[in-house]
Length: 253
Ligand code: PGA
Image (cartoon, rainbow, N blue to C red):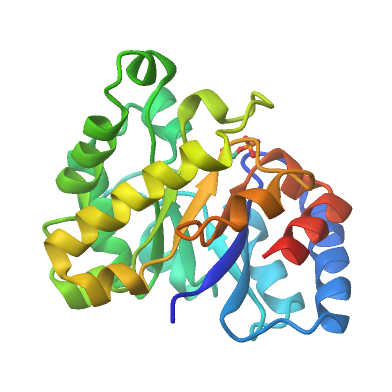
């Protein structure tokens, strides 16, 4: 049975002290909350926070994610952080290919393919982000764009490696805008993604892949999004920075 996940993407927010307080508030709630074993909370924190937060959460319910890694294994790349460093800090997940990284750091499908391989080699589970821009949706190219992102960065993997990958569908026009995709729009794309996985890896692999929705997911809309048959949770930006809002999202899982 595939995992249902409430994942926070803190982006470049919180000082270490603020991040610790936020993680403590979520941990305090979760310690009293009966979380079924097919559900998991993932906190996507800045690199500087990983070790401290890994040490304060209950790893049976909460995992820590990084938000990026270098595209090289190791070496003379001043300022970069490798997948191996991240794994050795105690993170188990990693957000790869977020649209902000594609946009501001020019990450291409080809480069992301390399990053996915480095993550898997170091036992990090990628939360691989896909999604179309507004003009692409308006031109009715959204399925084509998402298919290309999946094909060029993930579909070279064998089925065993692919089984460690999670996917987040994040329409770029919905990120940080307060305008979420409707549950029907999101479900349509999630079903399409699952169909592509089934064609490539078979029905059982498709059924076991967690596909999260991201883009203005919040305490008010999480339940209706998560009620869709192919939506297995959320990748949450803004609302994951407020403990009470994120807790409501966890309850909606
Ligand atoms: P948002 O961000 O929830 O603030 O829209 C989602 C994301 O970028 O992962």
